[in-house]
Length: 385
Length: 182
Image 1: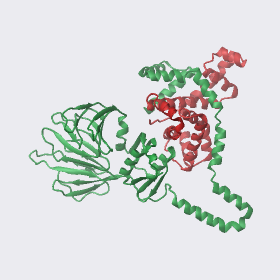
Image 2 (image 1 turned 60 degrees about the vertical axis):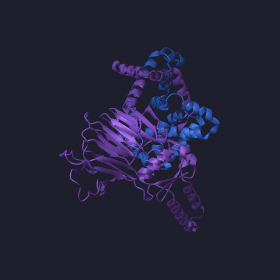
Image 3 (image 1 turned 45 degrees about the vertical axis):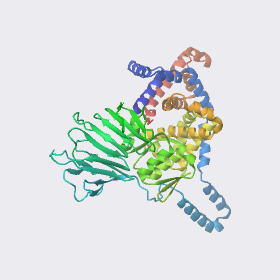
Image 4 (image 1 turned 30 degrees about the vertical axis):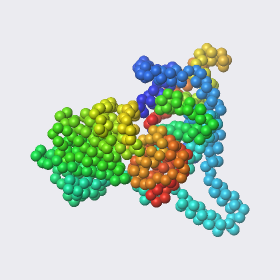
């Protein structure tokens, strides 16, 4: 998408200049034919009326004047103030200056800035593995447990948990549970080779050896799945509300939303069953199924699937999303509480791309800059005004 | 691109002349982009406020692409929030927000401003006479019309147009390192 848009802009500019090569013309035609709205946009943007209008409006927008206004806006008031009084009473004023300086320092100390020390950190690689007998093992990227049950090992810098394919089919089927806390994430490869990435506040229960007829795992929370292909044994993800039948594929399931259970398909195909219902609802790539947790109704829509799995690539991607929903995600990842001094702020919408491993101050600053909300951090609570 | 990197670094360091460049190269297009949502005067205020807040909050950018994406996205967010706070114009909001897919409209809006930003940048850096001719050309005027309008010969129109085109070509490579995440 990014590269393409840049290319189209270039082609349109060259066209307006009357300087398109034959191949470029073909490329432009392909884009124009792809969507009637592309053609409408093209005709409108290249029309002589548009060019006239643009140059006319430009006459009324003075960037030099705007820059001068900017220059006077950014000169901090206190510096001007200090300079002025120092001319009149430089000697007398020195102690005053010192105290002003101290006051300013103290004042700055109470406001939030990127350098402010907070106990808030982004989520880390950590989880707790519970074995069949209830024994628990703490897992994290920086610390390897003393011992792991046979058939399990850790891999790579992030200590990804790997279940070896079971050698003895006679072995009993035992269930293990991997749980990430708030502010945690973890990656695991199941005995059949299926890869699962658990987001914060998520539980995954799975057998140490899959049955010969089907593969079933249990999920609450949010996880991204890349299911290993095995036509003989269908793969099921079971949540409180839904059962997702997988036909070899990559997808994201989220049960952490307020009222819905959401399944987003990246590639392949999955079928969704509302618990207690026999009807299978098929999803195609880039479709999303939302089941209302109370009414148990299912709705399927087309989405930009990549934005729903951005989290697994270390990115928060918000697309005209409500601040309340954004803050819910931040709270889970940074393990903080959120307090609204003004409920109207919940409905503010924000679009943007932020890095999940950044300091919380960087994230909040970015949101603050583009919308009219202000944040304050007190201990482990974010206060929104 | 070397220049882009230097520009971003200077912006990150709160270099005033980098901000001057920001105004020269982007201000007009950003105001026009905001005008997709609000009136011209509000648009100017929204852009000014945004740039001041970039300075005050010491926002750091990692690349020219993310810088541009940030500007357009922030202008959109601020414009929409402005409209939402202005109840009187609620009819206009629902109109503005429900015309086609919002995402698609946004994409076309950014493309339009980026296309004209390139032209503005080129035109601003041309000699007076050459500027005049290039503008008339973009407005769809034929060479003969331009010649009679400016009372110059057709061959002068031709050579001035060529000059503008060459400049445009040089600039295109530089100006198009855009990354959009929409």
